[in-house]
Length: 97
View 1 (cartoon, helix red, strand yellow):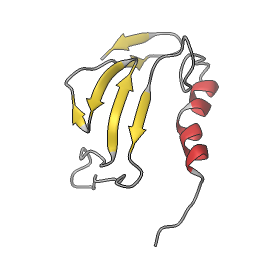
View 2: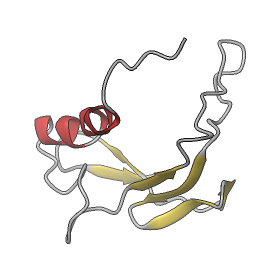
View 3: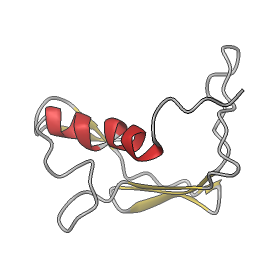
View 4: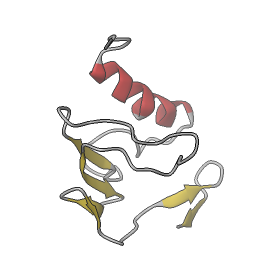
């Protein structure tokens, strides 16, 4: 049984903008000029979690494109081998990963 627990827009906001705002990361969690380009394009018709307790690193299906800091890391559902991420080590301190 599919049960709608939260509207999709509210779920996305609670995973992106709200945590960034609480941590004082004003350039994350939103799409606007000057912000880091962290973008995920989903196919909602095929979106499904494929991870299990035995295989927690299985990727979800339905993830079409991913940009991390403007770097395309998934394109047409395939990993590109490029990474644009950085670990946040406290406010304002970052480390490339």
